Image 1 (spheres, one colour):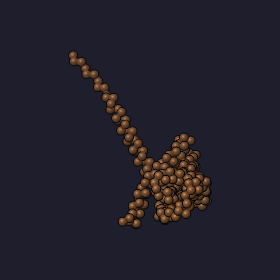
Image 2 (cartoon, rainbow, N blue to C red):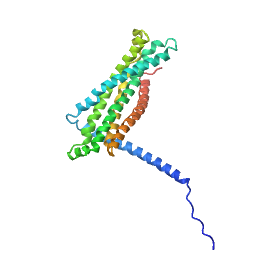
Image 3 (cartoon, rainbow, N blue to C red):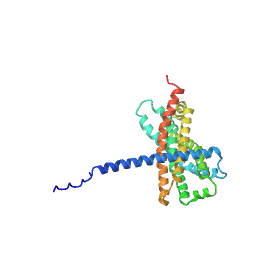
Image 4 (cartoon, one colour):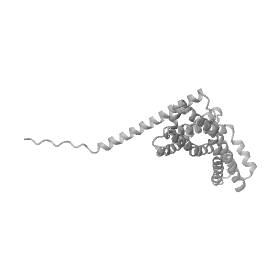
Length: 283
């Protein structure tokens, strides 16, 4: 009688491959779901913002928390941005003859166009974004958001719209403060410590920095503020899992906001560069 064939043993090499692709698909699906849900959240927030004005008594407290209480942090950050940039720029420019007089233009242009908006938004993503996510996440965990539904109040209109408006309006103003302190810090180090002539410093800075540079910086900071508000509020509203979920929401809000700031800065930089070349062709 012929011996029965031994049962086939499944190949061990197929299991890791299957597990790998399943994990990749799960991550892709989670990514698409996250941004799709965030797009729906943004649409509902914009709908309520356009159809009904914010509830009475919700704007000023958020303006105070997001704007006024951020002034010391943003002012200190802007001041040291300018001072550090002055030290590093001076160390490079003195290597080339005749470049020292361009210190003011290089420092102030870097602050107004890039460093001021980006670093101010990064600081606010850590201070404001994490706080918004933690606050709304706590309200979600303790069922305060569900209670608003039961009272006939839309939570997005009552909680999200005022915070969004506060970020969009005040983060550009805080960026102006950061730019101002950065310019002062750079000028103080360059003229008082390194001994550059103040008149020459400010003259070349005025010639090389125009309203277009200031406009680009403010538009970037407006987009950064909108991104911080949407991401942070969405993470707070989506919080689950008790105290650990609130902590994850605050962490995710900062990380996603920081990534969004860098991505927006890249694409807005390309956009404004193209518009500048279109409006003022070089030759």
